[in-house]
Image (cartoon, helix red, strand yellow):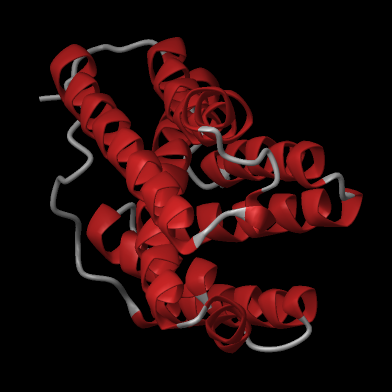
Length: 220
């Protein structure tokens, strides 16, 4: 049974997960250059350096995700893996629209198909590890949405607004604008975050279905 948790309890979990995303910046900007002698510019990394960075980042993200999911259940009585009801046709239609909008946005941003562009620029080995990295990154985006959604639902008592997507979009968007130095990427991040959050609601808050949907929306 879900305990009487405060909105702040859930929002703090969302911030912890977002902080986990930020650990990659710490690794790239400080730990790896200082301790391992990596270039501060990742475009100058060797194949081995790229793979090491992604493996280290994924391990960190996996631990943070495990902690957040465990703490949500232990402290708040909130099980993110609880079974949900079967989706109706209108929900699948809405999900399809979200996926289509995300793919169109990705195609415009990448000036082509993201997967093909990534494969051509990375090569097979780096491409494989890059997409394993994306799979872990999607878990964190999903948890930010889940906990952000729960926090605002507790605060405002309304369940039909994609609060989690707004939280994800703002954090992801501002982070991209800052790290990439591009306002357009920030705006795209906000838009994508909102779509991901809407897809979570349309999927009936089923985290398993939502993860697969978000993988398609984010990876392609």
